[in-house]
Image (tube, rainbow, N blue to C red):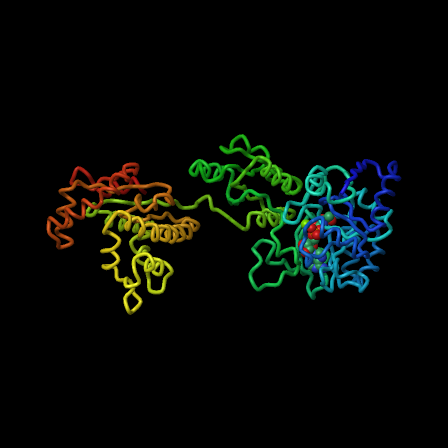
Length: 535
Ligand code: TXA
Ligand code: MG
């Protein structure tokens, strides 16, 4: 399809072009137009075929309804069954402007527009070009944001061109949008009005007119399973860049410290203006920290900029939720899939050490100092519990008889087969190690998110691959004669058995050379002093 671009800077002087755009709409076409919030794709709201073209151009799911745009309050009466006093008061105060009101619809409004709902969303934009086009078309215009479904809403003409060139017969360039996030959506179709999407008209401003207003839970939280989406748009992952976003709640100093402590965690930062030079990562900014309007205006641009820069994992400075900030947070949190980080995130330390080195004693003392201990041997046993998928895979690799008649694993039989040669050992490891790592990682993450520091107690920290999920690795060292002395006392085995056990640990020993070492030897070494190094 050929796309004609109209650049409109003066709606009076360019009346002929406005008429041309309006006649395209009257003939049943969909056209991209600017509004004060974001660009929209507009079509005659009473023409179902024209509205279908909007869904086609966007690739939008058909159950997600459109907002109808009007130029005069009178037009509201052609769309909704009844206009309650509260709606008139809102219109009086905030129209034209970035506020959408939902009311029960008249039959004439096609299902295509309402997404099959009995209500319709209406707003009167303030952008002079949008108003001129609606007036010239002589009908209310259904218009969703002018992005391909799932992409950030376009706030500048070049982004509309990126997404829609060749998909629509016309794109109207009216410059940058003033607000940059979509309108506030409030429903008056419920007993108590409810805010469904926060925007430039704030929650507080709505309450001043309406009294009690509910705040939909999906504004700051993921839509829970089983909860109906009052606004179908809540179900879809909107406003999202390609890069994975992680939001860090904290001050600028905490943000910087987090990056310094975790230098490989993210490849880009999204921060406030003026901070970019202090942050030790390539940074994109979105407005000033104390000015949510400036954040709203920049947010979607910033998302697109991150993608252009090839960002893969982005650490984001969280803005305040006050006033217009609620709208900014809503878009940001959703784009990040509600992934939050604390600057006080704990760290994961992998602890290894040969038999008799005193690793357990070290763990016990660290536990008393608030560390969470994950026992890798226990995790290893848990993955082969009765009925587990790992158990089944082991049985098909090493013979069904390794599962006893009671369904439990015959560890002795498995060991005799798995340890008979190098290849069998490798097969065993390839089945069990990824599972052990995944369990330990999940548990560690739960704890570090709560700010806890975690020790992974793993005699095979390096040979199992567990070291990969640790921020640091530490080896407890004791000379062989001390270890021998200890395990002869403790484990009731012969010297020969003890030495055999040591010889089996050489592979781990070699691999553990990269770990930090704490020494558990006779005085002048002191274990408490050594442990303090970890703490
Ligand atoms: O600022 C804006 O509102 C922009 C510009 C172009 O006006 N438009 C916009 O439209 O953001 P759209 O389609 O991207 O978002 C409309 C949102 C969707 O989340 C939709 O589910 C919701 O409003 N919505 C529309 N009609 C509704 C209804 N009857 N009941 C509940 N939610 C509705
Ligand atoms: Mg949209």
